[in-house]
Image 1 (spheres, rainbow, N blue to C red):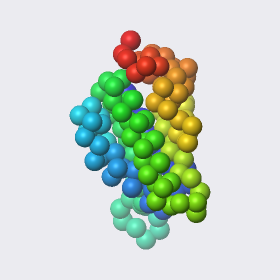
Image 2: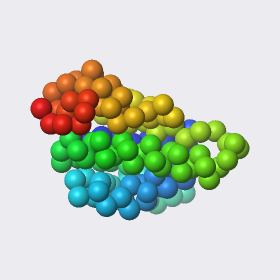
Image 3: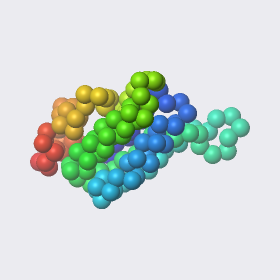
Length: 133
């Protein structure tokens, strides 16, 4: 399954870069997922791509999806603790063609998998407990 991760309201790509590094360090996720950064289009005067716009994720199985979501939730909590009460909360958008799901404070692996399942059960390929069909 291929997914894209974006950070809502992150024009400089700072939080997307931090998320990419966080996920790349997750050993459990690394066993079953391939991550690649995707830069935005170059702006005037730039020869290469702009700031990190999204993270492309290719998952090998349903366990990797649960690991990905768990890691994103942990990332958000860590960033929230680091920021304290200042600043807007980080909203991670998990996207695939025709669907975008916001991962926020109330998100769990089960709830996100259920949303993916509701959008396209065949593409998600997992049950709400994270098991393959």
